[in-house]
Length: 85
Image (tube, rainbow, N blue to C red; front, side, top):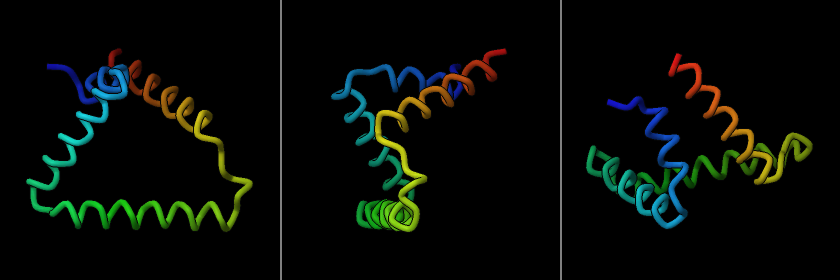
């Protein structure tokens, strides 16, 4: 059975439409496990508000989306390599 990092790596390699479909399916499964869509949305709205407030306090710490995505991919790849050893 593949590890969660392997599954994540495979999911990130999917085309955008397939990733969106998968994200929706995962959201639905979380909501079926005890939270409503409204609670799920409220949680992420709060998280986005928190992150935006953090950025507004110190914009010098922010990075553009392309840089952030590249850093996440590098991090994910290094985790994948560590777990496959």
